[in-house]
Length: 113
Length: 113
Picture 1 (cartoon, rainbow over the protein chains, first blue to last red):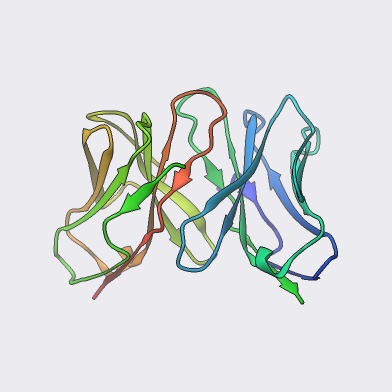
Picture 2: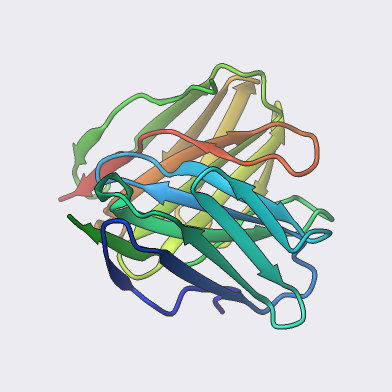
C-alpha cells in the first residue's frame, strides 16, 4: 500500500515560470519530509526537507510547503530553469522506529526553454 | 560532501547465479540502505542496517540478503538471481541523528538473463 503518493507522473513548465510538484501521504506518524531530484543514470540527490514542526522551508529557488491537516506537501521551483528537468521524488519518514524513508513514484518535470 | 560509491554501474548476470552488489560510504554514517527502483513503483526498500553486523528487512526482502562487516561497507546479495530481479539498485547512507537526509550512490543497473 503506497503511503506516499505523487499523482502526477509528469509536468511541463515554461522556463522562468513556477513549477509546483505535489505529494500526498497517508501515515499520520510521518514527521520528516524530503524532496529528491534524479537525473537519468544518476542516484537521487537530496534537494530540500521539512520537519513537521514547520509549514514552510526555503532554499534559494526551492520552497517546500507542508499542510499537515491535509497530509499534503508541495515543492515550488521559482523561476524554473531547463537544468531543473529531472524526476522529482517525494519521501517521508517517522522519527520513531527505524527512520526509514517511504518514497512516492516520482514526477518527471520538463522545463521548456 | 558525502560520497556513496557503488562498485558497478552496469552488471549482467545469468539466472541462478549468486550476485554481489557492493556499496561504500565515506562519512562514517551509522545507517545504510539498499533500494530497488522500478518504473511506476518508485524506490522500494530491500534491507537496511543501523550498525555493523545489524540488519533489518525492508518492504521487499525476499530473494535478497545483506552483509555489513565494516561500518563503511554494505553488501547486497542475490542468493540465486532470477529475471524478476532485473532492476536499478540504489544504495544510501544516513547519519544517525534526527532529521538527516539519506545520500545515494549512482546506482547499479542489474540485468538477469
